[in-house]
Image (cartoon, rainbow, N blue to C red; front, side, top):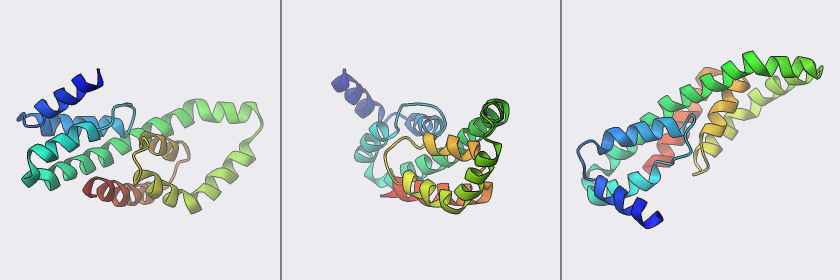
Amino acid sequence: MLKRSYDWCVSFASHPSAPWLLFALTFIESSFSPLPPLPLLIPMCIARPDRAWFYAAICALGSVLGGYLGYAIGALLYDSLGLWLISLYGLQAKASELIHTSQHFWFWVLVTKGLTPIPFKIVTIMSGFLHFDLWRFTLGMIISRVTFFMM
């Protein structure tokens, strides 16, 4: 099965709609999908080395935009379910302390995590859950995802 998936990625790499699929795959990977974009990105870069930077830019853009969806998922779940759970256990003060403390170091968690192949959606959803500052979230995503895909 792995060989068949690999063969499909290699054959699809030169297809005219491959950049659109790459963008979509990267977008949903940053927010909710378990499918990584690298198995498609690498064959595309091998098939068209002259467009490798373009493909990396597509991935970076898709990942950053998809990160906003992940952030929204985390923020909405926090407001609807998270507050209820926190209140149920009487942890309002601890939650507030965690959110305040996390603002100091979460930027570096975001940047570091974004530089690894570990699913980025974990950090985007948690950023929304923690109501991490949106400007710092954006800056961290841009730094980490552009660097990751351009390497």
